[in-house]
Length: 207
Image: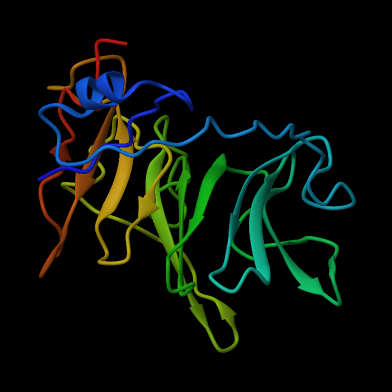
C-alpha cells in the first residue's frame, strides 16, 4: 500500500476530510507548515568559494574536498581546525588537459573525473571527455587510468558519479539516446563495467 500526505486546512469539515482520504491508505490532517526564509551565502569564500572555482566534491567525513580551479585543474583542500586549507593541485592534473567534474566515491578511496587527456603517454589530447579514475593510497593519489569500453565510447561522458555498490552514473552523447545528452548507468563487472544502460524516459527527454 501507499501512505500519502494529504494537506487539509485546519478546521475542515469531516466530510471534506473523508473525501480527501477516499481510496487511500491513510490521511493526515495538519496545519500548513510555516515557511522559513533561507538566504544563500557563499561557501568557504576564502578557498572553495572563490571566483573561478567549481564542482566541489567531498570525502565521506567532510574533511577533504576536491574541486576545479580555473587555469590550474583539479585541486585538493583539507578542513583543519574549522577552516579549509589553501588548495593544492593534484599531481596528475594541470592546464595541459581539460580535467573536470570530480567525484569522490562513497568510500573516499577513488576519484572519478572527466578528462580530454590522451589515453597513453605521448599521445594527443582527445576531443571528447572520457571518465578517468585515480586511487587514494597511503602516499597520495595514484596515476589516473582511463576507464575502458564499453563505458567510454569516444563521444564524451561528463559528470561521473558512483553509488555505494559501485554502479557508475554519467552523462553521454552516445548514439541511441533520447536527446542531446542522456544519463546512463554502468554496473561493475568482472572486466570492469557492463554495457551502459540508458535510464529511460522517466529521466531522459528529447532535451
